[in-house]
Length: 111
Image (cartoon, rainbow, N blue to C red; front, top):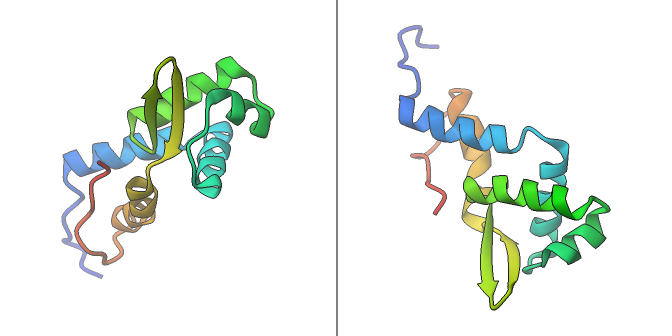
């Protein structure tokens, strides 16, 4: 191991920290898991029914997940449909490897 290895650059560290922070809640983990497993957009009502979590709580957590782009929102008229951002979910394990110093390809961005 190289004792003189450089730390992760600040911008990447801040990006990854926002991801880890967004997932530092059991309800948000459940919502990400639900959307990832369903593989189709869902309304808040559908998410509430499937998760057993109240509407205001679900809305709050979806907002946080959307801010870091784990979840994408498609608005159709007065309805909002939430779906998993496949790019973000697929690059999250890479983020953990980068933070832990494991060799990985350059970090992708969640767009």
